[in-house]
Image (cartoon, rainbow, N blue to C red):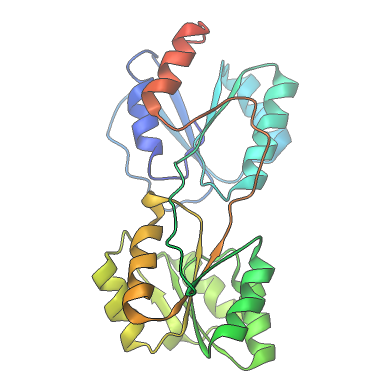
Length: 252
């Protein structure tokens, strides 16, 4: 099980109803909240295709379930390639999307670069809620355009270090772990005089609904980066449906 999204716990619970061992991998060392179970083994660290193939073979993995974040496109692509090479089934579990309000304040774009350009056109103070992966793009663009950038990231040493290395001032780093309510978002963004919030199309679990409600309340802009589109061979959005498929295919 490739974890990296909040709903991976739901998938794990479903798998443990039928299997004796689940190897869970996460890309980062941020604490992952899983119930204690001696059938679960945790591995941390990013895996390229070759490392995945080696792990599949050395651990006798019979099926890979990819429950990574909707924007972990490289990890998912590597996983599909590794499964083809190792000749085991690949199954994608992806969180459901969330309809956004039809509003002049909500803007959907195809990628991070487009989000950075549009944000700089929409306001002076930009609040980045997409994590640390996109920091460099936004720091470069906001620096060129003379805009202020505030980043909300996980409260970990690595996240703080990446922010500082990218050039974000300590006063402009908000180190907090969600989920965040509509009210909390609204109060924070109001206090910081934010003009534009940047988010990813991360669904209900990623707090996108609360962000959309908060910007509507404040009358500020929300720029949403659309999910990458990958050609998954098999994909589920319900844990029990995934479990039923594994049973029908005699994978578990």
